[in-house]
Figure 1 (cartoon, rainbow, N blue to C red):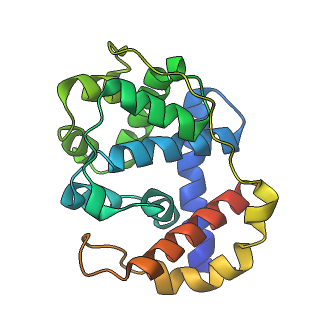
Figure 2 (cartoon, rainbow, N blue to C red):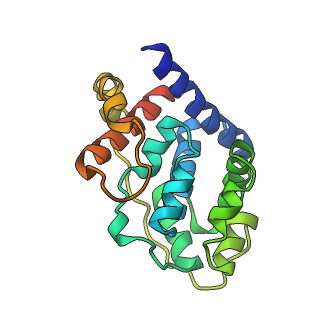
Length: 204
């Protein structure tokens, strides 16, 4: 692995490690799931421009995780506190009751890593009640539907893609994306998945 990719993996892994430490767990895969859920649930509630601006502040590999599955034509998704909690719980595979505390913990870690004001600017796009949950861990007032968490793909399957991911990341993620328009969405989506696979492998 070149020095560039080694640095990219190290930087993203450091963010995951800080999330794990803040959550009080040695389980990096759990921390990564929670971080991924935080990134996706925030991203999909933002406008295209706000989401892209926030994404530019992320480490290269976490940017791939952030954009994985993003559909600019469908955002912002107008979900409320209860829907946010359910989406977060399903992706992170955690009980809904834990989501407010987890979200607030990740918000604090991300705030410490980003430029001053960047997280606050993104959170300002959210309705007051949802922002209170994401930022301060405020309890949810709406009823939360309980669903069985989705099953994640096996780590072994994702590790198999590491070599290809390292080779193609530079082509796909370079400058991705400055905005949500004029982007080769197929190539960008592939690059996002490959970056995600590198980060999974680095934690294995």
